[in-house]
Amino acid sequence: MAFAGKVILITGASSGIGAATAKHFAGLGATLALAGRNLENLKKVASDCSTKSIPLLLTGELTNEKDTKAILDKTIEHFGKLDVLVNNAGIIETGGIENTSLEQFDRMMNTNVRSLYHLSLLAVPHLVKTKGNIVNVSSVNGMRAFPGVLAYCMSKTAVDHFTRCAALDLAPKQVRVNCVNPGVTVTNLHKRGGMNEEQYEVFLKKCKDTHALGRPGKPEEVAKTIAFLASDDASFITGATMPVDGGRHAMCPR
Ligand code: NDP
Image (cartoon, rainbow, N blue to C red):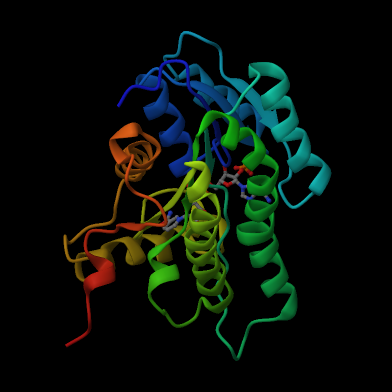
């Protein structure tokens, strides 16, 4: 997997899976455009990236169309091309059918789906030129149903189907589109989504039973799968939804 000379734009690069992905791609020689909202965190991630070229840091709110367009435009202005788009930014909130709201649905769909849709369609003309590819970060919640996270699950299923449909649209142009479907991965996601320290600790302990491999995942494990899908080693893979979840997607209660 060599990414020398390849320009990779990663959203949500300021934290968790996106930050780990940035560092991993840096180690593989990629040129990086890192997007996030928190500039301080983006700077910290960039300082951990051992790249020859300095990562381009792009702050913006992805639910804001102007910001999303600026992220793409600045990447192209700065590097002149785009080889890989990693649509990673996302949020989670809890709420089942009896205690969700339209506002929650809108927040979840706007962040996890609409912004990904928007950034992808802006990126595609550039990816066609480079015969590049897209890797989306979905979730095991896209593949399987869980109670109490209705809008999040729906948003991730939309990401999975977006991946398949866009893969077929772009296959004639040799642009691949894939996604990873992580299981519980230790990041800031769940605490930002409302869990307190104690609840998060219990949630992680439960991974012993909820994940066949008996533990939660590490962001680096997801990062390595993203890099594989983005690489020429995955040259015949498109439209794939790849679990990185310690076997959780294959489990059934008994
Ligand atoms: P983190 O909360 O650690 O990171 C989320 C990232 O997304 C941050 O960089 C954040 O930016 C960015 N982000 C969120 N909302 C916006 C927005 N509106 N505009 C711009 N940037 C935004 O979570 P993870 O690393 O865990 O999440 C990454 C992806 O992985 C998500 O799509 C999530 O659904 C998915 N995932 C995570 C799992 C887990 O257990 N952690 C399991 C399955 C999937 P900033 O911090 O700068 O605000």
